[in-house]
Image (tube, rainbow, N blue to C red):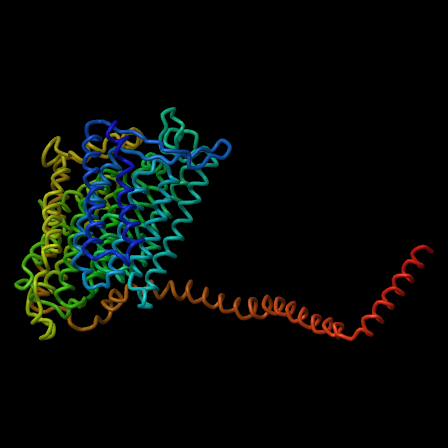
Amino acid sequence: MKNILQLVWMVPVLPLIGFLINGLFRKQLSKPLVSLVGCLSVLSSFVISVLIFLDVKNGHTGVVNYFDFISVGKLHIPFAFQADQLSALWLLVVTGVGFLIHLYSTAYMKDEEPQHYARYFAYLNLFVFSMLLLILGANFVIMFIGWEGVGLCSYLLIGFWFKNNEYGNAAKKAFIMNRIGDLGFLLAIFWMVLKLGTVTYHTGDNTGVFDLVSKLSTFDITGITLLLFVGATGKSAQIPLYTWLPDAMAGPTPVSALIHAATMVTAGIYMIARSNILYTLAPVTQTVVAVIGLATALLAATIALKQNDIKKVLAYSTVSQLGYMFLGLGVGAYTGAVFHVMTHAFFKALLFLGAGSVIHAMHHEQDIRNMGGLKKKLPITHLTFLIGCIAIAGIPPFSGFFSKDEILAAAYANNPIYWYLGVAGALMTAFYMFRLYATTFLGQFRGTEEQKHHLHESPLSMTFPLIVLAILAALAGFVGVPEVLMPNSHALGEFLAPIFADSAKHAHAHHLDHSTEYVLMAVSVIGAAIAIIYAIFRFTRKPDLQEATGFGKVLADKWYVDEFYNGIIVRPLNWLGKFLNTYIEKGLIDWVVNGVGRSVNYLSRQVRLVQSGQVGSYVLLMVLSILVFFVIQFFLKK
């Protein structure tokens, strides 16, 4: 406890200091110094996070209160950090993967002008600070501050190359769609204040939100959890607020890795996992979470089947994998969802950084139809990317197998239909990822001669993070080996048990017999293996080089969801804006305001005529004024 009290505040503050130094002195600092400040601040946070994790593992958890943030009447909201099993695990993932992305960025962004290079690292540091604030907050208000911070930073990083209007539009889209979800989160906070008078998770005198859940009616709990889930659909890109995430590819590739792997998109999962007792007591909300998550997983997977932009495939893959995490949360598999967050952070960051290495070698080419045969020229990128593909496909013993299997097993125990649909999504995942792999790295090179001549492996500062992430993607699953394969070996489950203890008391546990689990594992693994083999043979020999037709075009055009939103929301709002601007703003308000101005000008011109400069006129006016004064006085006396 002593270590936590002394060190926990430093975890978010160090990246904040890095942001201030690089941001305020961006015109004075050299690129090497900017890199050192940006990377060292996050690395230092990672080291401290490791110490906190070890202390928490030894049983030392607690809340550290720094000062009263809001104190109005009976409402007291402290600025406090909570160090426990869930926050300690998330700290490791965010700071660890975040540092690797910072290190990778030093080479990937080296061609930027010094001022913009420093601005980029300042934004990255601020992003990490905001995410750490979200994780460490001991109440929903501090979480919300970090929540809004990552939303702001996503806007700044997605639109980093702000001179490109399309990139700016993508940044605005992300910002606006997240604000829609954030309104739900904010209303949930107000509801908790109204009913409980607090937003703190736990307190020493048992007056926190999770301590007082018995005082909430079923309607209250359902309403609060649904509103929190609305917030989660925005941050974690679930139906209907998912369309911003693929467009977020407008930012630099390391930004895509940061947003899509370990930070912003996992905020919704963290918030629901933190609020697990509320969701366990709201079965209606859990069903909604599971159904929306599964629908998102399937929809995004179908879209990814026909995408040709290497980053767009990975973006829709992220949306799909987030759907699986919400499926896990919805069926009460909180540990499985958190487990998948961790493994996904490793293999998805690996895949995005691997894609960045390919784009770097191909001189910013992102269309996989113009690639092929990169295996020999980019050996490290190829091998690490392959490991990431195997992990996300759920092939044992790679990490994705263990975390996805835990979610699917819980889904089957809750409702077999969830499992059938979940396995269908998993098979599509294996297929489209190895379509991407085969089209990019196997077969013949299909780019230009100039691109072929300049193909080369990325520098060490880019390949080192790839190697570290590949090792984690391959081995991280062993912290959560299922009971059926190795008894008492789910270290992550044991570690997180105190966080989900209250939920376990209220949940209706569904247990599968070992033979059923073996069958479920075998079906999903064999199905994924068949999809992988077919994709490799199919797309190595004959990649999709033509534009999609028929139903394939519907998938390539993303089910026309963006067009649908444009038709029913964006265009009507634009029309309403033009109407208000033309007829209300200019036709009425401006007419009234300008009319007042014209009236004043007219009266001023008339009154100015009195100031003629002739003494006789002034004497006449004085006499007339005195006469009027006496007449008024005379009649008033009467």
